[in-house]
Length: 83
Image (cartoon, rainbow, N blue to C red; front, side, top):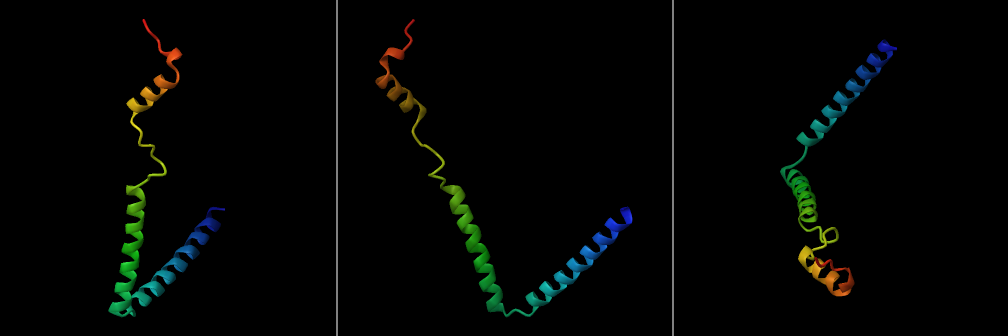
């Protein structure tokens, strides 16, 4: 069993090394304009992610807690505990 797993790992690694070489060759054969286009797409996608993380308006309810308390008091004055 151990030997079978080792052989599978070796086959996977050799496949990954071949894939990495092919990708590297493709990158080397790109023109500077193609590289710039890829980099701009990469940065643009990351900028969109940053914008999404910056403004999660759909997640955050921005009403202050004190305002919530006041509204609750106004709606339910019978619930106010007075000592």
